[in-house]
Amino acid sequence: MLLARGHEVVGLDSDLFLGSRFGDQPIIEVPSIRKDIRDVEANDLVGFDAILHLAGLSNDPLGDLNPELTYDINYRASVRLANLAKETGVRRFIFSSSCSNYGAGGDDFLTEESPFNPVTPYGRSKVMVEQDVSRLADDDFSPVFLRNATAYGVSPFLRFDLVLNNLVAWAVTTGRVYLKSDGTPWRPIVHIEDISRAFCVVLEAPVEKIHNQAFNVGRTEENYRIRELAEIVAQTVPGTRIEYAPDAGPDKRNYRVDCSKIQRVLPQFQPRWDARRGAQELLAAYQQVGIRVEDFEGPRFKRIAHLKELLAQGKVDENLRWAAHVESPIVF
Image 1 (tube, rainbow, N blue to C red):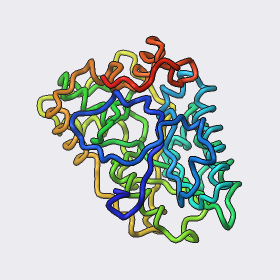
Image 2: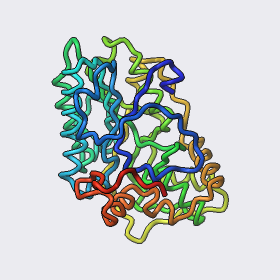
Image 3: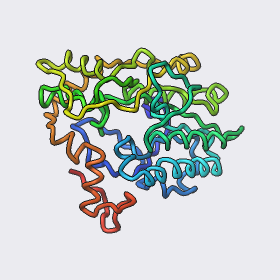
Image 4: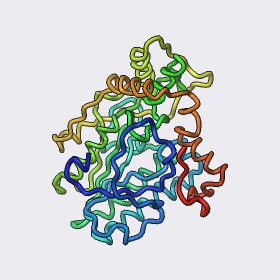
């Protein structure tokens, strides 16, 4: 999407999940730096106008694997990156934050002014980045914080540890829409394509409109209780039924988010997806690939299991850095 809009793009990634390629989704090659976010140097950033920062341990189970490591990667490395960016003249720093910042937010709609109440290392790390990086803002350095709703949708490195992606996968492979919580928590959801649209729009917006601000990314009408998403999936995947795990209980993560600000400030942001259409897209993709339970519950696609396997095989060390003897990531 960035290339289509005329931008020059360079990637930076440690490639921990290179072995998690989904199907034959096309990947557009761009110049890329294979480096851990913790090891970025000033020379890596010279000449860039903007950084879109999405690197990190990407969800709550990963954050719980080693909370201190989560703070090291998600928090300290992010703040260090922002400082380096400012020092080297990068004017825009767009941070992929999260609605997990709101954590145990209750049933009322939450705006960007609502208090933070994170309940996981992942959520807390995002809050800490926002707080520290916002202090760096000045006339020459403009950070923006995109608090994405829970992502879903088909992509080349599709994640199955996201609620809608996961529910459709269970339905397709087992005939059960399998819920691991009691289904009562609220969760806002947003398609990965619409998240990408938000980044593009913010990148191109006049600085004075977005400078040092946070935006909830999604659509206000796309807040659902988890059980409502399960019902949509059951209606989408023929012959399926909803089933609750034996230990399904309440989830402390419960937040309902008002996303009106981004469209009010940036009316060019026009999200196109909803949960029902997303479930239909996922169903078609899973059927085409022939996804199996052992794929999305095992180390190929389940992020926490993938990292544990890399650790067990000695391919990464306890700090999730590639071992010296591993010249390039293994593609499964």
